[in-house]
Length: 62
Image (cartoon, rainbow, N blue to C red):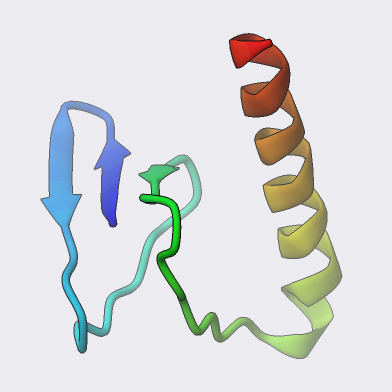
């Protein structure tokens, strides 16, 4: 997985733990598995943002 925030790019590999602040753009290869931790009160908002972003990306490639 890699993530872009502004003009910086971070690459994460199996076993890495990381924090991604708001505004990042994730790029995940097919078959990648992630375990995400978010504060409970923010989880629904986080999951909605992820779903919306993924929907936009799928529409961009169609």
